[in-house]
Every structure is written in C-alpha cells, then in structure tokens.
Amino acid sequence: MTRPDVRPGTIVIYTDVACAWSTVTIARLLRTRADLGLDEQVRLDHRCFLLEDVNSFPIPKKLLDSEIPVAGALEPSLGWKPWQADPSE
Image 1 (cartoon, rainbow, N blue to C red):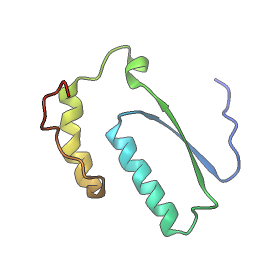
Image 2: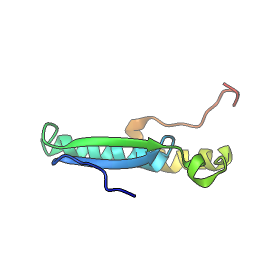
Image 3: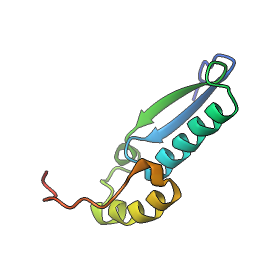
Image 4: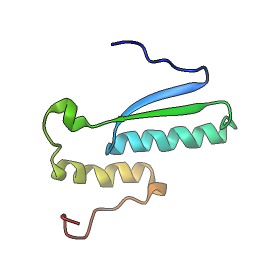
C-alpha cells in the first residue's frame, strides 16, 4: 500500500461509515481541536470505507444496536438512542 499524501497540519482518519466508536473519536477530536484553538491549524481528512466490504459479510444489526447505549453514554451530546420505528424505515 502506498503512503497517503498528507499536508502538514492534517490528521487522516479512516473509518467505517457507521462505526459508533469512530464517531465518538471524531467528536472528541473536533471538540479538543476547538478547545485548543486549533480549528484553523489542524484539518481532519476523513476517509470512509465500508467494513462489510473488508469483512465480506454484513455486520448484524443486533450487534450494531448493542453498541448504541455504550457509545452513546460516552458522548451524550450526539443524542443517540435505539431506533424505535419499524426496522425497514
């Protein structure tokens, strides 16, 4: 794999598009960047991928649903809660 071209002052992060843990990490990273007054000096280059493509199988909804209370408690500002409507929606 070739090394990505990254400009100075840039953080490159690769995450699954639906990863709760990545979302918590990014929320904390952005908050810390703001708290340190580095919004203009530090950029985030967010590169998404589908974990299902890497694993060659879909992640079970039951597993994803079980992460919401735990990850949501780590970052209450995200407002996560279990889906209450029909799963097809």
